[in-house]
Length: 459
Image (cartoon, rainbow, N blue to C red; front, side, top):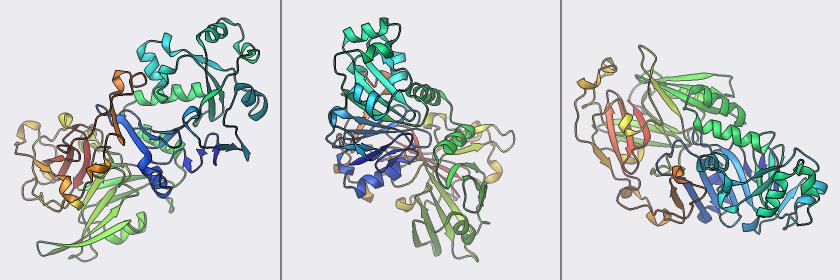
C-alpha cells in the first residue's frame, strides 16, 4: 500500500529526490531489475529522464539539469498496486464522480486535452512528460499538487467542448468516467505545472536556473553547482550545516582535513602507490566528485579533483550524483564551457592522456599538458594529438544488465509521446567507452556513443 501525498510523494518516492537516490530505493525494495530507463539519445542533457516501473505502473520523471524527481505518474490501467490518501484506501476502479464528490471535493474547472487535434509541437510541449498522445481526448481534474486524468469518447469530448460550462456538463454525464492516471507534482494546478516544465526545458543551463530549482526542490544540504577555474573548484552550497554559501578547493593548497570538515567523511576511500608516491582518493558519490590527496606531503594537500556528470550511457551512471559545473574565462568572465558542453563545442580540442588506473580516473597528464599560465591561449595555438579511448568493459561492466528492456533510447524530437515503440539495444562496441580531451590542466572525458561529456578532471 503506497500513500499518496499531493505536492510531495508517493510511497518512498519523494519529489525533489535525485535519480541516484530513487534507484537506491528501488534496489532496497528489489524493484530495480523491473525498471526501464527512457531518455533522449540525441539530447540526454536537455530532455527529461524517465524511470518506468513495470510492476507498479509508475513513471518517475527527472529534470535534465539537476536530475531531480519532478513528476510521479500512476498509470491506473497498468497497475495492481493499491494506494491510499489520508489513511483511506482508494478503490481499484476510481471514477470521476467519486473523486469529485467524495474523496477530494470541488476544485478548479477541469481541462479538456485533445492531442489528436493539436499539432506535433504543441503535443510535444504539453504532453511530453505523459507520453499519452495516443490515448485521445482526456479530461483532467486538477487539485494542488495532484491531478486525475479521464479518457473521453470523441462524442463526449465534443459535447463538453461546445458546452458553456463543461464543469457542470461533466457532472451530468451518465457515462462513467474511469480514472486512467494520477499525476503528483509541485504546483497549484496541472496546467501551471505543464507550463512551468515546458518553460524550464526551453531554458539554457545557468547558475540562476539551478539556484531556483534547488531552492524549490531541495530539502537538505546540497551542492547547487561548482565553478571550475585554473587549479581550483568553487562549490556553491545550499543549506550547509555550518551556514556556508560556498567552499573553494585550491589544488596543492587545500588540506584533506578542510575537505572532510566541510563535506563530511567520504562514501569510499582508496590508498594507492603511484610512481613511489602515495595518494589517497576520497569518493564523494553523494555529491558527484572525487578528491585525490598527496599523502606524501605534510597535511595531505589536494592534488586532483574529478567531477562527474552522471550521464545515462556512462560507465558510472547511478554511481555518482550529478554535479553541475561551469567554467568561465578568468579575464572577461565569459562562459567557456559547462557540464553539458558536447565534444564538437569544446574549446580545448587536442587529445592527450597517459594510461592509468581507470577505476579512479588516476591519469598522469602533467607530462603532456601545459601549465596554468597558458589557460587563455587561442585555439590556433593548440596542437592536436591522438586521443586515448577508455575501455570501461575491462573493469567489469556487465552488459547483460544493460539490455533493451532496461534502457530505451528515444529521440524526443520525433514525437516521443506518439512513437514510443522503438527501442535500441546498447552495443558492446561503444557502450561505456570514452575519449580524453585535454587542455592545460583540464581533462575532459567524452562518451564515444554520443559525444557528451561524462567527467572533467583538474590537476
